[in-house]
Image 1 (tube, rainbow, N blue to C red):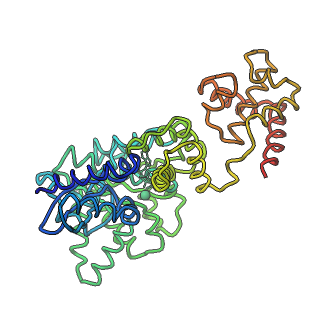
Image 2 (cartoon, rainbow, N blue to C red; image 1 turned 135 degrees about the vertical axis):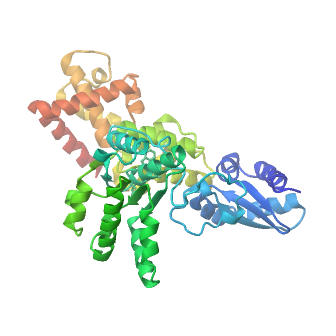
Image 3 (cartoon, rainbow, N blue to C red; image 1 turned 180 degrees about the vertical axis):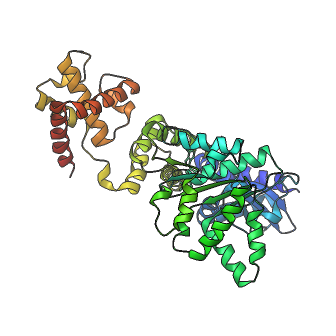
Length: 450
Ligand code: ADP
Ligand code: MG
């Protein structure tokens, strides 16, 4: 019996005994890659997945595999090499990886999943992406060297850095791409001192055609490492090699780094990534859900995009949690579950029990426009304004998805709702009367939340 036949049989068993949702989430994605006398080797997509099935589905899988095998058999798991386990020098799956093409250059410090293709573009990262693409097409070009990508956590800096590496490796396999976090650079340096191998250390970084260094803020306060990095940097830079770095802030604002390093960093191009705007968050949720094999209705996608605002990593982990919850409770992902998961992430008060109707009622009382008119079709100026303000407040205070707001306001579509929000936002900046009205309502209603 081969491993795929065995695993297919076992999967058949799992499919018929486990709820279909659990099956498609936790068993379908598992692949088999080898079978020895007493052990079946299974491959899982990532570390999280592994931990999850170990704690929730271990016995079930063992049972079905043993059944298919016709007797006890051990199971070993490996994490897929594409699974994004970062900076693991000892890849446990390396010896079980018949799938890896031999010819292709492997760079184990570059995450293959982080490509330009999988990078979602929005207003917040457009410029950084363009610069990164440019550098990967023509590395070493003067004005973009060094390139520094900076911004807060979870914004996609590491993703872009690795995307540059992946693209260069793909286009020019002869180019040597060296990629490391500043921590790894530091550790390599320290251990080279301990082992009297500083020459090898220097060499291992100075052979680079493209040097990618992640999170340079961790060089802060490490004088000797900075010294080393300074020399590495100069040597590469002078011979026209491309250097790309990421940082948590603009190089000019970093403390604890030598001035001469900072002035080198600033001599090229620095681009920032801002937190994603609403539309981009929605796009990201959609894409990440799809990657995880999760079908989410649009109102849930919006709910997530509305409330999880800070960064892409949080959006991603919200989706993983949703998956986990739904599979743990054997429950389809519905609006209630999504709300629960979001509340766990951002605190209970953030999504209130105040309703859209409460808001409309309050706006009606304040503006003396009938509730019926607020949700109606009239385009009369005061009415339209009260409607727009109500819509804006639903979104600001309740974070209600655009689609649901639209439904409450006479079946308007989500772009109309978004437009209304923008109109009010602009008016609050320019129009004293509207600004006062909105902030009064906001205060009142927000107070009602507590
Ligand atoms: P940073 O290095 O800025 O802290 P990462 O690059 O590690 O952030 O990004 C965190 C997670 O979010 C990663 O899984 C990454 O793939 C994902 N991510 C960030 N930005 C994007 C984007 N624009 N498109 C797709 N995925 C993204
Ligand atoms: Mg990072």
